Image 1: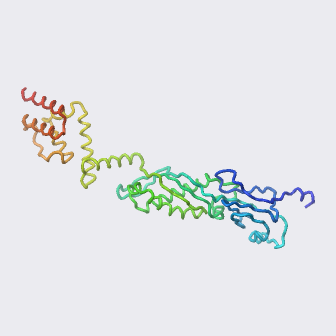
Image 2 (image 1 turned 60 degrees about the horizontal axis):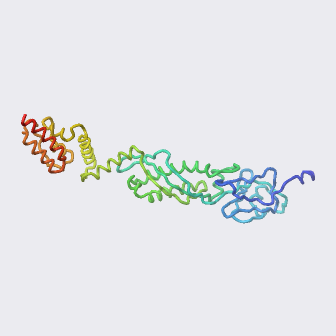
Length: 339
């Protein structure tokens, strides 16, 4: 090499990364045709790790501090190049910096519901959302498994991969835990602890440590949540029995009574039509099982007008119909009686 060419060569005296771009986790020092001056300085800050890579193979890893680069401080690289220990010329190698700062406030969520077995509802589809934080702890594994030889590797890029790992791990964790959905929703901290333990192992393969993981909400898809809300309402309406499904059916029948009252004629129409069907007392007694004592369904034609009036008066006294409904139905029956 001529003297002119030698003079044109550029030597790097100091290698450092200022992390002036937010969200970058791995950054390759721009070498071009430059060479590292033997005896140059490598500055690694507290929140960083530097990795020397020679021909695609990791040679050395440097932690925080200022390092003088010589063949004595790069023993592995020296061995790879078969350099003599007294070699004193500049050398060339790729240098990667990795940020080890904690990446906080990262959001996660299930884009699609996760289907799990549940002892209360058999099978449910669960959605969950929360926050997590992580950091690079093993630059060698991170470089080998994820970032590779790219000029830079960002937080968004790594989180694309982490998201798939997170959701797959969560599905396995929730499925294996056999914790009912109602218990999950009531104790989100316990759910987060279970998932975090499994995620820690999964992330470690990629040189990433999970710092924090929490579950902000656990929910069902809208149609399942509506069914659950209705079932919960059934349990809150009027002392259901141990047989939940029977109670739920009773509640549905009872819920239809206000709808009937809102129709044309209301309860008065029901009272006036006692000759064509069961009495109001029988309907309520069958649906609620408590408002009235069970009574045989006698043929409507055999009931006298007086008997029907007594039944209506009984319903009024028990508060099951209003005075206006009673007066209207009474007027209809008296009209039939008088002719």
